[in-house]
Image 1 (spheres, one colour):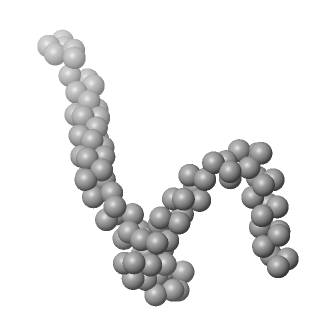
Image 2 (cartoon, helix red, strand yellow):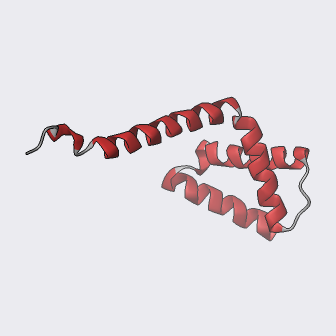
Image 3 (cartoon, rainbow, N blue to C red):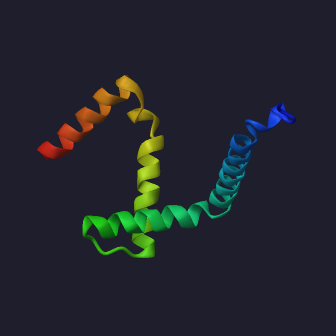
Length: 93
């Protein structure tokens, strides 16, 4: 005889709520400390690659990567040909 038929999924729902709260907290922390996280991540990437990382170099590298990612000339297949031609002309000089 079951007295509480709705208890079957209660444990799973508690975990879902906890995961959702952690995700919301992570988004809030990242938006508050986004620049610091980006600089630290760029510094770690430079250290792993074998170059000495400083805050200024890491910030410059992160901004350069963001600029390349946001460059409208290099997005899509039409931009691929343009970027490829630019790289070939720079390599031949």
